[in-house]
Length: 276
Image (cartoon, rainbow, N blue to C red; front, side):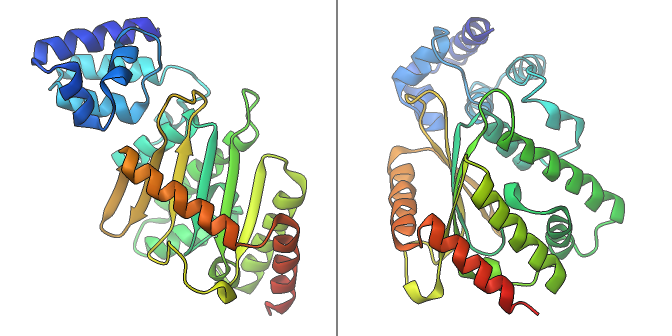
């Protein structure tokens, strides 16, 4: 399958008149990465495929074929049963391919760690006029996303730095927030592939005061990481080395400033006692 996809992409690139170097520049990848994809030596990420298809101005039929081939695995393509916005479809495809997520959560708890009631409250808060059926469909999608943490073919490793604000904000009310905190404590104490660090207010200024982000790392160490930033102005996928290095350094700094795992659990238990 990998070799077939590579051959098709090679044909498309040559038809477009782009060199390997030009194709790589279009999607923020090196010429060696494009060469390895075309030679069938490396899987193409969904975000890379979409970028190359756009750069090559690929015919609709070929776009559909290659996208179907890349998302052919039943385990990784379950989300195609949902009518998702294109940006969300791209993200969940990357998340399914990833081996590790390094997260900084600022405004709310990360989607993979939310309880059902908390997730419903977040969706309703962000879409106050949406029909109830739409909210429930999105809720089902987000709950199913969490299966990456327990999948048989290598559970996703999740390393999250939680800003203290995520612990105090009563999303869905006090009881909903208490349930969410209990869930976080349980995940931190019982799930080996989940690491939680709390960043207290007392730590002061830090490199990511402007917002949350997610770094997606992939099983093949030669595959560059992708940084995802969700903002009111749009969703960003950063792939250039200088950008990924910057966020890698930020996450390392945040993790260094945050409480260790045991102290983070103790901190969350203290917050839980204070929520009335």
